[in-house]
Image (cartoon, rainbow, N blue to C red; front, side):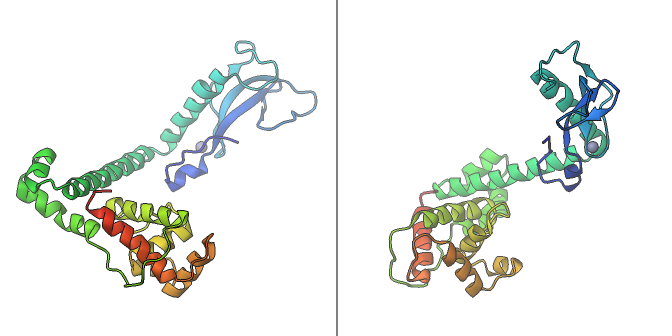
Length: 251
Ligand SMILES: [Zn+2]
């Protein structure tokens, strides 16, 4: 029904906010219908932690035919007050958001270096662009670039069918995992997506971390495929082949 600061910081989820109706007896109401005989006289911000905004937007000043708050009251008034409340009770929330943004920027920086190296750019030029010496750039990123662009060994299965749409999607996610996630599936993906990416990239630690054996993971991914493949190993190899052939092009 309301507003959630949805950036992944646990304590923020205890503060869902909304625009509360203020009734003519001074009480608050969040739902409909109103208690019998009562009227909406205004609105104020509210939060599930029990907080209520001090300021009331009166219906006299902000006309409303149906008792719903006008958009300006809801979006510019109550929502902003609730946001101010959130940052007042959780001053560290802004630190969390900024740290997340900094980490995302760092991963993006790594990805651009991987792309530049894949495009044949020298450490000299990359270092210059990043504001550091050739040697420093090499030391900082060489291992990362190698891990992200090294050919993935195939199991030597005969080439399977052309990739189905899920296979193409898994290949795309594998590229993201190698460019941005240090070769691991992103925790934001579905279980099947994570398992499939881990199988293709042979990320056995990740499977173990998810509580899956290789056989269980295969079973789960296979069960979700629209087009049943007769040879799952060939399906995985086909994706690896795609990744290897695209790696040199920086894709
Ligand atoms: Zn709150």
